[in-house]
Image (cartoon, rainbow, N blue to C red; front, side):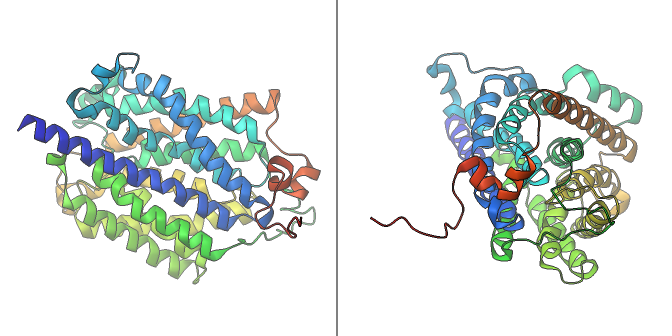
Length: 400
């Protein structure tokens, strides 16, 4: 029976890892559809290479920082218990690799390629797993202190704060330090529109992310005996709540409509195992509204050129999700309880502060040393030709 349980658990979390791995195709196509045609190849290459760098760094360094274990042992030990620890690494790696995938969307169309890979290595090797260990592995007694102070630990079941807010708030200083795309904000005060290159690809990316998200949330149980249908239904309700408010407030704009469900899913991660489905619907609806309002403010009024709106989507909605778990997770709101608002505020604030500090340090050092931004000429030509020497749709074929 033990062998059967170990095998079932290994398969369960492996399937979750595969579903979240597929989400990276969603990140790629969401960015591909949003950027202009001259930057589509760059979007695809960045996501794949960032994931590859993340895998090596998290395997060698990051997983040990978060969980105090390493893989510098024989294969016989690694294969113990059906290799469960290895597939757990695979599952959690896909979470870690989401951080640079999130950042990629914010800095799209004008960021240098190699400095971003260096940033990926530092973020996935240390910055992200440092907070991951605090939130999910009791590091430094922080959770014990929060519990002693408030009565409950900081609760983040599937990473509203640990993953999404972390990625969004690291991206914010990166976007600001990088600066806007050429001619995005003109001297006369006008905002130059850079419309998405492909709504179908944008929509495809959103749908891939939506489907994979059920692995992201449900499989965060990590063992088969802890699986909860409540998590699945709450994820569904938050998704549709975000979609409908983005539809209404975004005035039927397809970019808002397809990011709305993602906003809802970001927000519900933290409390998806605690909330009543009506609570999850409300959390998702607020997140969809937050995304539309904050994206409009950042792009048009504050003139922060966050191309995919990753700070509103992941940073703001992720922080809202961490706080919302302390409201809609309460029994008085139909939830299961075991959580409180003060603990959620403390944990969320800590995650946001650490992400901001990490983003400023990493991208600040890179800006001073290697530079972050393509030259105006390179940006005008597009990252596809200047970085990869080929466009997504070459105008002419080579004839023999």
